[in-house]
Image (cartoon, rainbow, N blue to C red; front, side, top):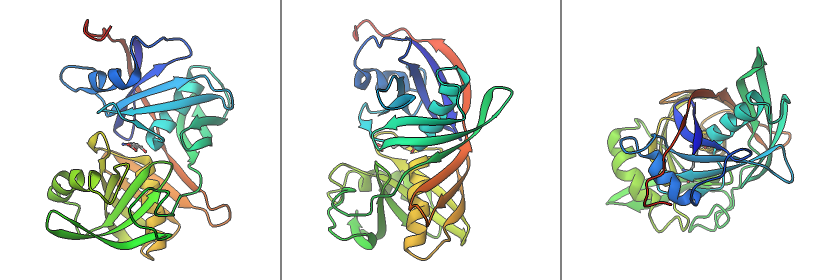
Length: 283
Ligand SMILES: N[C@H](CCC[C@H](N)C(=O)O)C(=O)O
């Protein structure tokens, strides 16, 4: 299986161009194998770039545990870069189909290659039942949950996929690595959840660490950063335009008042291409 390794500020996936390549097995079986950093290629998951009936291309994203997610913000910037750089559609404005609908992406290119990518991430979903959470408020802000003997105040937002944003003094290893997985799998979140621990530096600047549903801690999460932007505004902590520092780099975010959409800008990088040999047990 030919693949391309790409990352968006350190959130790395194995990308397969399904315009040209046929998968040797179902993607949910391939994702855990290629994601393994010792026995596989290494990555936070698998992303398929496929033809679309309604857009320039379609993204399908599988976490390292094989579960499929509706959306991936860093992944979508990389898909846009791939589609542009590899001439699937050489357009500076691309329409890309995701589980969160068709999203519009703006490419800033130099010498025929995409450098910065700006994604209209669409409107956040704030209805507790739709996110989904066990809360039936709209929005779900400053709600208390009990996890492992501790109380957390959570703010929940869906950007197509579910997020739980928790503002903290310091995003420690204990919070991310011990409580992250417990929150992910708690009964408050029927479809599990991605968890963001966020330090507010100023009304226009935050720092985020992410525990991702199905993949564990990652260096960055674009849908998570968008959810953080929304949660910051809803709780009166931040302005509508922020700079978010993630472990792997920075993202610029804006929750636009006029159209209610979140705009996310950041880089996308192609690292290498290769050919993966599926184990005999798979085929
Ligand atoms: N890293 C991705 C999000 C992956 C979310 C996935 N873990 C889920 O199950 O929803 C991003 O940049 O938006």
